[in-house]
Length: 558
Image (cartoon, rainbow, N blue to C red; front, side, top):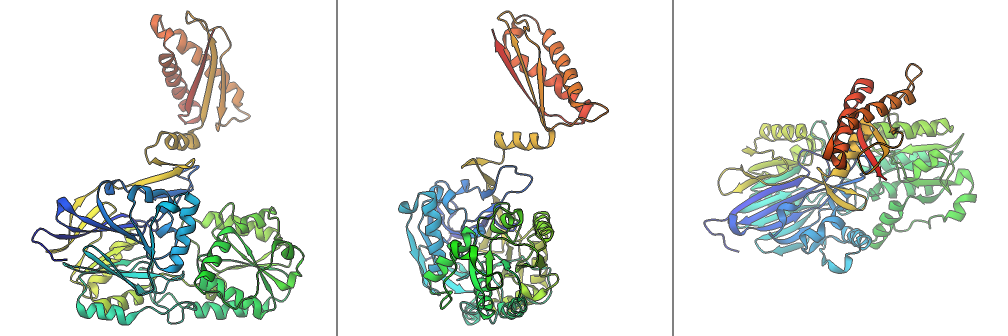
């Protein structure tokens, strides 16, 4: 495709810049009025205490409505890169492109969403190239903590962008090939306009370490535990880690029981592309229940303390197959993701209380390595690619700024650190933020997508910190109260000095007084009555509890 005088090449993150997770990145080419778009990754992040009742959060793709999307390319199969497809593909309706392992998991995800038959999925071989209008996209083999991670060499008439995806440099990755440094170096020789690059470990000196080292550490640790059951918690998506645990268990004379839905899902995808070959058959539920304790290893989900995962159920004593107790062992072959410290601590406390001995990367550093590049690896990537422009992504704000500083220190001419919604012009001319477009989050709440400002979530947040008061009474058709006023509380405290019942009686009297102050037509308007009661009780609650609860008033007209 030839370039015209009005053409621009732009980069636009709608998720993943200023946060770790929820990746949704766009590349646009053409004049402003008629741009064509390439979408890279469509991922999720997960809810926390600030989003009660919400487990999954996805980026808001509203900007893309009505735009020309040439294709959606997925770099790899982690949930923060593909997890939102089931929710957001109907708003994009463009073909999906992925390598075989990722494509397998995408199909499963779209099948669960009930839209698989609507979606065109094109499998791209490792190292393959896709022509999507002004974008020629070549898959560049990387190493990461999942099978088939890819960077993208995106060639356009205005220059080439290297979009790294998630990556590290691992000379012995256990599965798959090493990072294709020759391809990246060739890109650098030909000229890389910009590199959009992972920032997760930018504050960590050195390198992330190799999966080969983890295999050695696990073989030593597991081989030395000759008595009792062993459970290993790790990320199911890390097929290399699963492979290492399985091989270490078999060397120690133990058989594997897979615990957790995602373990089975990832195993199926791995076997589909020829991974996890020549391993013994996994134990069934029935076999695992009776298998000798010193000859079994449970490979489990839930290393982050997830409430319904396998390890949590074991810790609570509710798992139908697995039991751990005095004399047994639990190995956490994973890192603590920021924000999960409390849930992991509670899980480990429960396991310890059952007499289970714990092993973590703190006391056995070799049993886990990161899947993201540290500073030495970032320096090496810049030495290979030699981009004119550095665009840090995949990190909190502090990560992006530090990554930009590192790039400047090693001689990159231009750096820019966009926030979600910032449209960055990469060419022609110097890199610059030229526009800000709508961006944000959508919450999967009750099986449907709702906005950040959704009333239900707002009320749930408010109730979770302030409580709820429910006021009910009967009135006749003339507006006279003809019953006692009943006030009930949810989430509000009482104590010996002032029992909750006394406070509620006081509130009932105040509610009655508020209604009696109303005159004429106001007594016929239930909304007016509800507002009057709400104002008075919120003010009183502020005095009693230093809270302003939600007030729900129920009026029965007789």
